[in-house]
Image (cartoon, rainbow, N blue to C red; front, side, top):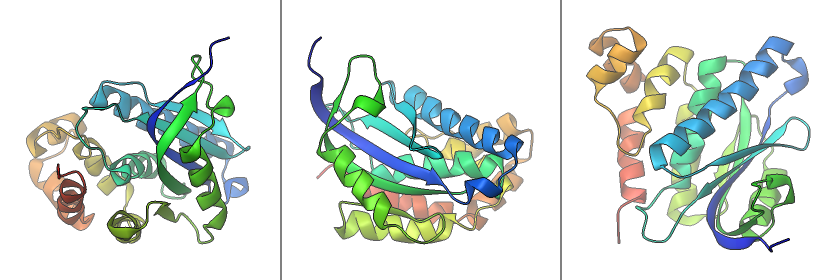
Length: 213
């Protein structure tokens, strides 16, 4: 068997908050929401983003960052997953620990057999998160500060706000008119939802985090 190749990945390790209080339908909706987030990232980025169940009610996502690709903020990845979860139900929350670095993933994509510094850092950070659906970035510094602020803002999202925010988190985001047509609502309703969700400030923060040095 060939040894896994090491490459840079964004790793998100998460677990559902108070999962035992969720009804079966809510738990299933949460799992589908995580799959929806991973599939959207795969489509938007044009590279496979792998998702796996992890430690019972936990989950893990690996997003490759190939050399030469445009910079991708781990915060964008986390917000995609949060928006997907909130869309599925306002009682559905997840802690998320982000880390970026070398990761070794088997050729079959089984994240439960993956290893490397990014996986270790993400897993260790998750164990340190104590409050509710907190998200944090192991990188610290500006990325960590932006993640903490975006975490505070996004914890207040409603389902309606998350539905509008989700497609706008694409790196090449659509227009509000396109989102309105997809959701079957007015452009004004999309704009109001984005403003109430704090998306303009989040979008500016993501642009600065992903700016090429």
